[in-house]
Image (tube, rainbow, N blue to C red; front, top):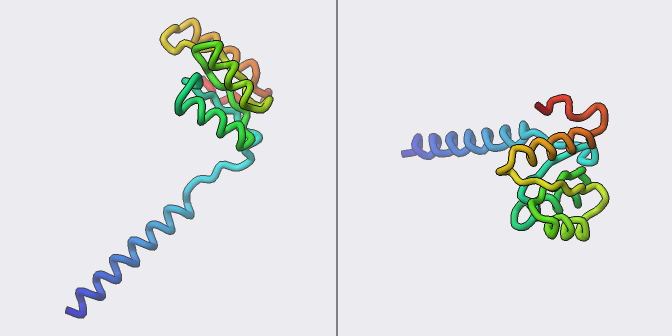
Length: 115
């Protein structure tokens, strides 16, 4: 029976080791003030809250809203790092215009990986 206890301890140590190893290798996002993030669905709900949170962390946020009301509410509750963008994800012209606007607002060295 003692070998069962040793085997259990070995398994537990292996699990702890793998957990710590995974956490140490977890990618970290640094310099949030250099990040430019587009978030859709920002009129209400998760998108709205995520846009405000990213703004509060110092990220530059393009908050895409369907309505003018949603845009106005976000402007009131955010810093100048947050830019609202009109976007109807069901309309390809709207998507193209939003994409072009975001690309035009990125600094020269950003947006090279955007396709």
